[in-house]
Length: 201
Image (cartoon, rainbow, N blue to C red):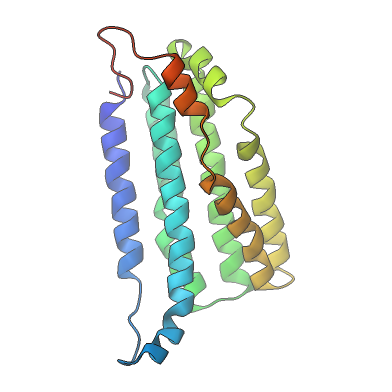
């Protein structure tokens, strides 16, 4: 089967996740600029999670530009990823409302499990013969994908020492993935769709 419906469904879910997160933001208690200080933590935690959702949306889009077809296993792997991403509003809000060891650890575990789910999705798609070689050539060694889980684990462990220390590796991962990765664009430029073929549809 082709990828169009899966991509449309995933885009809708990610849009809902962002909407839920922004609805969790609480406005300042007063009407002065100084009252924004009380909302600073909410805005920063929202920004971090928003960036993560954006990163997953971007990489998900690239992933399915490369894939030619999918099967039922890929559909379930994609739902597995969306499950962990759908918990972002919950773990983000808890960390905002009750910043401490437990909330930062749970947030880090959520980030880690989402990253593992994306890796599972990628490996599942590589099992499909029509896409295997294309994906291997496009994604290469995927150094970012290997380093990120290690940083998440580091952040989780640091949170047991000081909660704010745990956030540092989480921010580092976000910054790493914000750096544009031209591999997919280079690959698609070198391997345009053949006649009658539309990638990602």
